[in-house]
Length: 466
Ligand code: TYD
Ligand code: MG
Image (cartoon, rainbow, N blue to C red; front, side):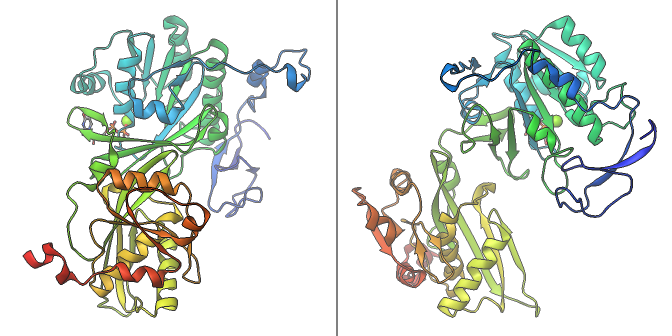
């Protein structure tokens, strides 16, 4: 294709086409084609990728391979280090993504300050002025030792400064704002993002610089720009939470140097992000007592058990088509649980509006939360109460049966630590292995059996008080 001519490119997989298409024939994604301009020297990134292989590259016997030793630097935020797999690996490229205003720049500024104590840090911002950055840094109490700030969006200028400053850590906020003079497409386009990221990655690998890239999210909540961006970097971290709420959770979607199961929990305060070492306590604080529609669950995020509280509100629908709203629980999962409850227990949710919420802006995508969701829903519908001291664990099958969950001991232990004295658990879990803990375990085979834990509201002290 001639330079300067336009073509269409799938932002998910990079498939190119002369005309616009609704569905990508390669990856099957819908509505992902964006217009791009053919570059004078099309660079597929191959040229720069050559850095990884010297001319005489040969296959090596497996036994002769050496275990890599990753040099890591602590970021000063143990919660972030945990997600990274024990600290920032030297020469690695990390993509940090999240909704606008969630705290990406704040987090990186705080990290820069700690890293600056032992390393040279170059913070490149294409979004804010030096003054704005300084204002934020002051608010965060940043000392700025060994910290260099560059407000720039030109890749060539940034590379020039990298040559001059020779940083150990390079922070780019954000990859979507960068543009390269070599390319004619606009900043944020698939080509610009891909090529600029590739240039930065090669630089990182070549010079052993650790790079932290900020990535925007698209309207579906995925990382904006080409999907290949996620494949190119070593780790993809996602910063999430409700902007109106103080809690922020960072999780790894991909990590070449550690597990992707770990999460880090922060709280946004007046002076920046504060680590939350004991998130369960925070999530349970201010919990209403003896009110219908609530049920506690223990979710397992990696090795870390976390107590969450599920709230349901089931009210008579004023319109023929009832509303369904879910916050923190997958919408389809909620619909499935509602369908099981209708069919297996004969409960009538279809004439009611249903609202579901997980306290603290937490997102639960584990099936182990099914039982707690079901109990919260039934509790709200029937106005019966799940006792405060009780926690519910279990995956709900389509026949209403309760399936075993993983890491049950860990979960029950965390519940005990926070003062829960009873736990409803799938009977299958106890058949497999006895749990010898000083807590009352209530084994249940089906959702029907679990109903016996619900109490009449009069039986609870709090409701008497209301
Ligand atoms: P920011 O880091 O700019 O978000 P992002 O880079 O992800 O777009 O953080 C933005 C929000 O955080 C902003 O709305 C204000 C809030 N904030 C605090 O509450 N406390 C603070 O100390 C700082 C710096 C920001
Ligand atoms: Mg920002």
